[in-house]
Length: 119
Image 1 (cartoon, rainbow, N blue to C red):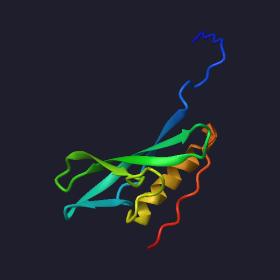
Image 2 (cartoon, one colour; image 1 turned 60 degrees about the horizontal axis):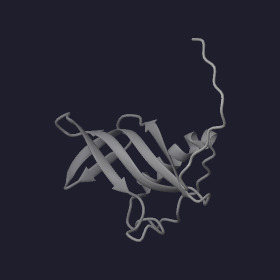
Image 3 (cartoon, rainbow, N blue to C red; image 1 turned 180 degrees about the horizontal axis):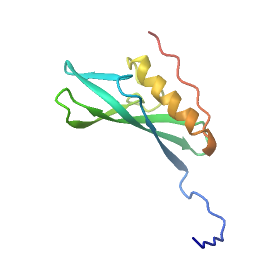
């Protein structure tokens, strides 16, 4: 492919978002909703940085298999209602997925420390 590029690209909005997708090894993460188990196989984690502030994980969208084999999407909001900290009561396994995504996003400058979650 013959390609040329010129310019000085930048992100215009003050609220910068990055979505990082990771494939999960089958069977390593089971999500339970209404007493039904779903086997997650992919996670798309949304990170944001407002006005150059620290990066925060806002949401995880999981692709999962239901017990009957049907693919479903499950969304987990990571921020509390005031959007000023982590949502209480989320399982530690969800935060591990966020850390995995943040680690793989290091190339775009995301540095991330998981919130202190009580187990």
